[in-house]
Image (cartoon, rainbow, N blue to C red):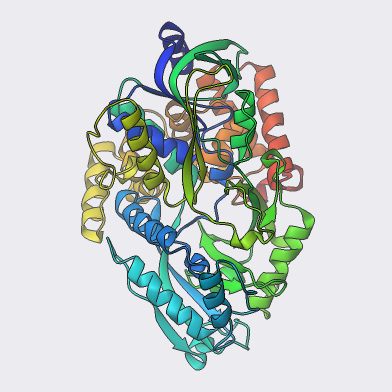
Length: 574
């Protein structure tokens, strides 16, 4: 019996659950872990793979939202920078400091508009450029709001001469640069998965299932459908939590509730093969304004490739989120404006990704002014439904823990229970016991090398990918014949086998898009996809026909959602 089949059988035998969470993105996963920590029986389901929707499409930044200070969202920024600092402490294997530089071409521009917007709640037009005085005020506030749990330097400024000497490829109109610290995340989808796995380890009555969808509900129950077998299960929740993000209103309609809570906007990104741009970034993020509308865009190094983004376009149906041609043009124009001497064009695009921000619905026509704050709206029983639905609306990626804490406290109050423990100091997955200094890292690697016999370079790579969970991966790899994949020299057959066996893999695209970053980084070829399918098939028992279906499914998703056509790639391109 497979683990997934076992969990389905467990639900069938005990169909009542205190909390049913629908949605396995970062918000649902954070809530799931917190409820499990409190000993709550909780079931989480997602119609697709965990973290395969909006949570897979962030700009790979963990940040407080410096620009939201323009709109007076001080509470949001304070919360987000605190959560950024906590993630640096609790998930140091995936979240790391990121120096960020802002090129400035004006001195006073934008200051008056900001004052008017804050005082008059939106009045005033945003300036074409944010001047150095305005940025100085903003960064001073940003440092102040982020003083709790601070582990990074405060901001600094460089003169025109210093800035252009350091970055000669910047726009020559730059008069100063400002540098401050935020953070970046290497594997956002993996961090989400680790939250879910942690939750299941914390409480035997906490279960998370991917590829299980909500079909509807009535009375005191809901119908769940296993997307693999087609089997329908009836579950009776005490409370349903709608954590489907941009899909919240669509999910509510399945429950017979016609709501208009979400007014999301789409953000698209490009991953490029451009060594000159990567070098120009100097290991930092550059935070620049677009020539078209003055919006903020970013370019940052991500796992050895430059990543640029993003757009901000209203989109009602999140299933239609794709990076369109005009968005590519927009992002390429913006990066060329920031680095006019660099050649950046479509031929360098390795992949695209796009997601819909689950923002609360607003009548404001300007997408940039839409609040990123989160809130939980409760739909009381009624219209034939005898359980409440808690809808987790809005929010940024970074403060998922705080959002989960707030909703956990609401649910504990609903059930008349008290909080057992907090999550502020709770490490996530491979962040537990992570060696944070060079000396500690050396000791850790040396000890693991002695126990497994694997060489130091290999173990260092595993530590980067899995944090201290690398110990489990290395032990598994050492138990059998080990060697690199035929078509990817930094992954091995047993490492991929470990992922498929232990990380809730259902489909081949789970491996190439979310358990690894092979696809988005341009490392995937047709030959590699076939090799990965062969390994997964041996673990999951796929027939030859199923292997063909999985390869075709993965190819279709890669083309449709990420503009990755493996027919145009040879093995030598990886």
